[in-house]
Length: 400
Image (cartoon, rainbow, N blue to C red; front, top):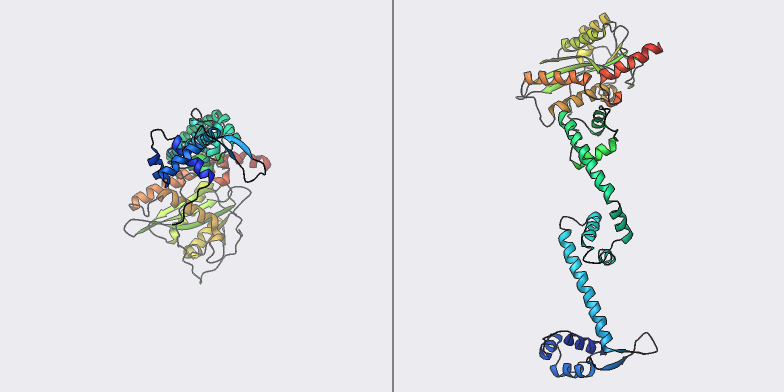
């Protein structure tokens, strides 16, 4: 078997291991290193602590003479450095148990800086020292923001609960702005706080088909053209019928009349049928609310109740001009469709049906009434439709 050859560096490292292992015997160290005891003994005599030698570096043509003691000190420093890195990483692993985020690493450095130098900690964790100091200098402001967010979160939760989870960030912001004592808050900050608290307004949509067109009936021209706006109240109205599912398989129906100027629900009717009298009742309520509908436009889809002769007579008697969008195009009556979707989403929330017809009538009536007086509408600058109309009424009178 060919004899093994060892480099000068290996021999010196072997001797250094032996001399820096108190209590260890030559036999033990030799066995650990896979060499003969006598060989290690000879190396110790030749390269021991009191021996001197000359090391020739491979990258230089000249040689430098160093003592073995200096080399041992270098190895000791290297071992100490590796042990320190190991200790830091072991402690960091426990600290990062819930996730190694940048902020968490900064926090670990701050907690461990009394034990290890900041420079060394940042080096081991691959952090920029200046970033850590910037993070530390902003701690007071960060704490202040956390406290401010906690206070805001409590207020947001109160509003969110009061609205039964129906309000999103913008409506919650508008509700918070009611108290003049409170400082104004940006809706983006409210949205961030709501996300952190996992508070989200209901956004579920339910597809509904209640339009039963009668192609034999006359079709009225589209006088709105998807422009659901008006210069003043009592000019343009939109209406629709939506179904309200009841437990057990039956349905109730809601007919609406909405003023396009303030988005106000001026007329509505709830019944367990979808006959013409349902939409007539809704239009009659609008007439009572406004006093007169003469000259106003009423826009709807091509449902048979809206094209019926009875409803046409009602509109003619009230001086209302009928308008209809294209068949099968919900966008032509988007305002009414949007109202229906919001109502069902906010009233039913996670339920699929109402428990009974009585409960349905009561809950929908309450929501429709509150829609005008309390519910904030984005079109109305996050004011309730009644409030928006009243605030603009003086302006309209002055302009006329």
